Amino acid sequence: MPPKPLDYGSINENVKKSQYAVRGELYLRASELQKEGKKIIFTNVGNPHALGQRPLTFPRQVVALCQAPFLLDDPNVGLLFPADAIARAKHYLSLTSGGLGAYSDSRGLPGIRKEIAEFILKRDGYPSDPELIYLTDGASKGVMQILNTIIRGQDDGILVPVPQYPLYSATIALLGGTLVPYYLEETANWGLDVNELRKSVEQARFRGITVKAMVIINPGNPTGQCVSEANLREILQFCYQENLALLGDEVYQQNIYQDERPFISSKKVLMDLGPPISKEVQLISFHSVSKGYYGECGQRGGYFEMTNIPPETVDEIYKVASISLSPNVPAQIFMGVMINPLKPGDISYDQFVRESNGILESLRRRARIMTDGFNSCRNVVCNFTEGAMYSFPQIRLPPRAIDAAKQAGKVADVFYCLKLLEATGISTVPGSGFGQKEGVFHLRTTILPAEEDMPAIMDSFKKFNDEFMEQYEDNRGYSRL
Image (tube, rainbow, N blue to C red; front, side, top):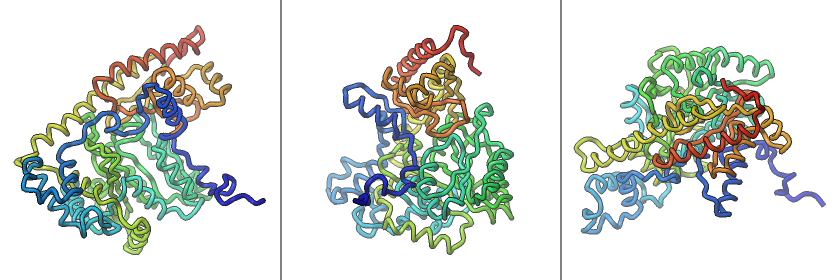
């Protein structure tokens, strides 16, 4: 009897090839342990509200009123909601064609795209065209739409940083393209060497791969570095020389924990370079409401902006977006509130600043607590989290631990992370899920657990790591870098 269409042997091979470590083996085991009653600290995914971050008051007030517009007709609405939230809700409802229950344009509401264009102009000092801004269900959906447009088959390659966020490797595999890795240099604070980029492109072309685009994640995920302006200039010049589109994943642009390297957008640096580069390099920039001080992951709000993309291609991208009919409308309103924030003098301004600054200042402290905690541990070394919301320590695993992992049929850092999970309830992601150099092992954890819990979490990690190293090191020890 022939196999059925959805028997495992009959399904799309690209689906089998795609892997997504953030919700992979470790996460599934953690979920099992949680069902058994063990307390699990899910630090595997950047999910701020799940780890206790409170939603900002003003955006939730605005969306609540948009979701229940009959409240606006209640004579007592002013007792529950401030006047600026009421005014903003009326403004966003006026932009829709039937409230939050109606589809929007496949590109998103024109009024909100106009607000995003004004935000980009204010941020970068260069104009932005609302017609070249598409709202999406989170930045991830936008990345998938663009990669779907770029990749024609296995001979098309996408340059992706390693370590990388597995959205890219999984989507490229799903679409049947080829991931072309370029390695970030851990000893140079996860910096990017253009010579290494050039080698990666040359090697791919030698194999018959047409390298079409380059991904940068700034600030970095999982590595937490902020890309300098000088490095961005080099990247854009490289894309110009090699005829590559640049995909700028900038969803963590509000998450900055040091003052030496502020966030600078790829769009601003591109425009600053002037012609011919500013007129030639094709750039897609992504942003999201999931990160920053909003942390509204479950709302699935994002956008991308296109620069130097030919009109005929924009039309095709619109067609891809239209397949989903409409990005979700409440998330579009969250995006509108985020990029058009309250201003001094607004009734809710002081509360908004107090809440948002409180979150960012706490994250800055947590980044330091976690980095210092890891660096105090035996055989662990960790770069400071300059931005984003992750720590990516290198674990110097002793040879006996690597041998034990092989006997257990596990990659060495998966073996370590599973042991960590069983012993402490801390659910992390092994570095192998993001890519890393051969023989080097990491784990990724968010810096999102509550600040008051962080010392105990780091103590728990240190105790586990000490015992693990004691078990697997030989008497001579195993020195760290």
